Image (tube, rainbow, N blue to C red; front, side):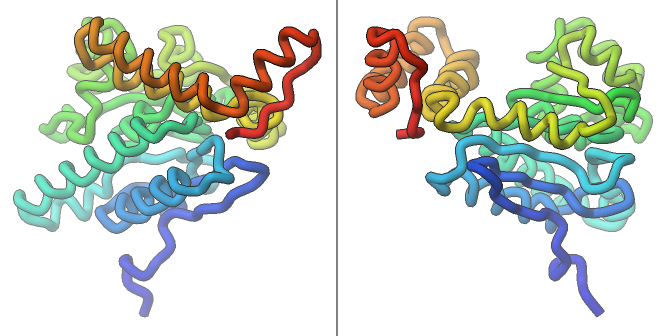
Length: 266
């Protein structure tokens, strides 16, 4: 019999410079330590692959992006295991957040609990219209959102709104989440995945200087957490790396020559 550790819980494929990371634990794509370990491995694989310019994370099926942690698993393990489970999830999602490549969450279905915590560690969130709800309802289980939710939601929304959603355990529609700024775009159900991939391709060469995109992301993610003077230093160092790139030379030359730049991602 196949054990959980032997199962493929995260699929990883690369298409046209886009790493697609799919959570495949149907029906609700809940996560365990084994799934988070496979997600961690996929993140690192995409980070080291020079042919990958953008990451897209999605859930298998049409009902759930991810419904969060496997409650049955949490109910059966020791408090010590739960602590290390949360610690590893924190490390994995921080690694995703700090990877210098754009990360897009394709929210094809309900995105709740730990599922929203995964999505919050992504840079851009795109949802399928009328396909689900988002929220951090952990308070209804007598616990708090423990894999970054309390911190990332309070950075994504006004603090009072974040506290409201978490303490009430409220679930809101994708459309309401877009109005709050929690979701960037909502695409129509027809051709949703094709449109997500089309959106992702704009950040790949030759359309954009993908390393500049990644460094913008790093400047924001790292700079937002330190003093302003230190953030400016981070920005300067990342800008110097951009100045040394082939893409910067191409972009400046194309501007002077009044032509469209063709970037190589180098």
